[in-house]
Length: 192
Image (tube, rainbow, N blue to C red; front, side, top):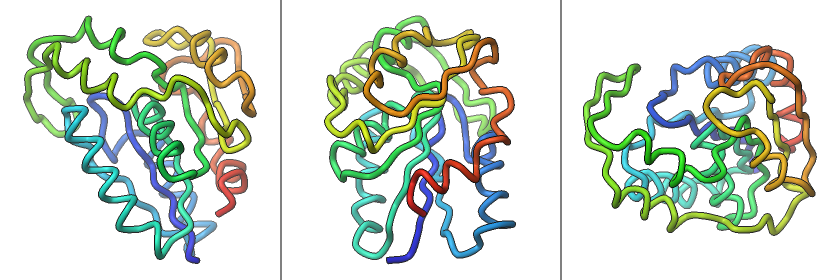
């Protein structure tokens, strides 16, 4: 089967995010055989889950898929791992976004796309619908986490992915400083 890298961006992000761009550029330069998919995720959780589920379902018969998910994309990647048994690298992943995003209820604008939308309490319930309480196959995950993440409590991810491969660095931030060190190893871990 042909290799495919599926990068899932975070909340209010886009395919133009730094890490997504780095992964795409790495594959273009060093592994042009890998198909790279970095979809613009819908703003609302239920729509995002349905969209990405349909995408993976349409690709998994033809491709060997590896996931990279950042922040909320890490949360969604964890759900896809459970559904499709796909290896995943999660970067500063959101562990309980339904708690975190309560602080963001109300009017939102995606700074990349300019899309405006309203985040409501019902969307926190949609996030809970795709929660994966425990990691079923720890060997299929690699956690990349920086303790200086100013958005998420890094300890939640360290605990949730405790049985998985982990690279936990002091300092850093939510964007994951120095991410350019990892694309080669990520591709290797994902078996692409």
